[in-house]
Length: 78
Image (cartoon, rainbow, N blue to C red; front, side):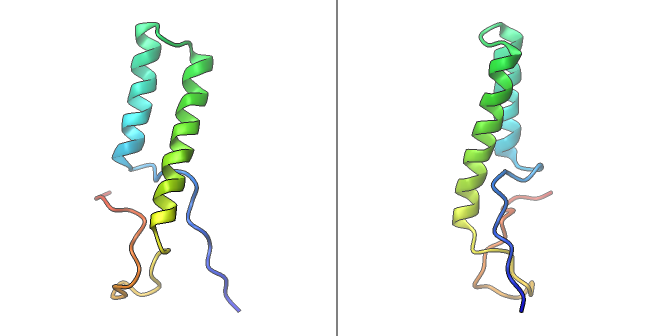
């Protein structure tokens, strides 16, 4: 019996959205708007939240690349 793994709760490391979240935290830190103790949890929480949303939209990865009924989690090149 095989069980399918649930999608990850975090965005893929190649996600442009994750890059945007990290860049926003870095810019906030560099400008002095937030300190590192605020920037790190903010980035982690937003990465988890967006990954959770992406995972809900995904039916799981297809076992067969020709399976059109399932979407790949990664919707971008990388």
